[in-house]
Image (tube, rainbow, N blue to C red):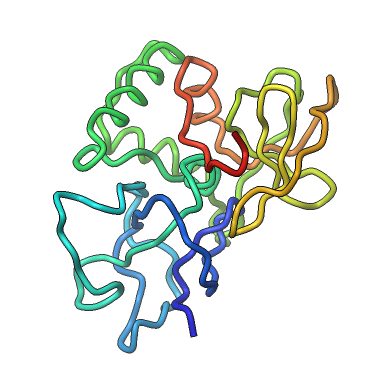
Length: 203
């Protein structure tokens, strides 16, 4: 049976065998037997990382270092509340911080960003924080809930999400309020010029 370590745009962590393009973590949230415990994070530094870092390999969800999570692409990781890792994805992290500064006028350190992101991504009861916004104003790479399903927003189309990839798109509505899954601070970052990596099924 696949391990419970695939992350959806809703932030849920599920057990599926779909392949992914990024990994990441929220701390140590697994127990013995590579089983997820009750916690869904142990710190606020929710990051997304490259799958291959200098050729290093390791067994997933073993030991007590961190719990490897996996994402279809960076847009999904962002919707779930993660940000680029400042170590293995230094260039992406710097671009993210640059865009944060453009959007807000502040250039925070990673812990400051993580604290702001945390209140914008998850409630105390572990449910996802969402907000309403005009679809016409949303940047490429944001996630919305459309007809009760997560959809990726692109320039002229919206793509239904599945863990295996995006399904055929529909035309992007020209106006109207939608429920946005991607945390508001990251939406601002994307509006300021950061474009997340998108799975090939949507480009």
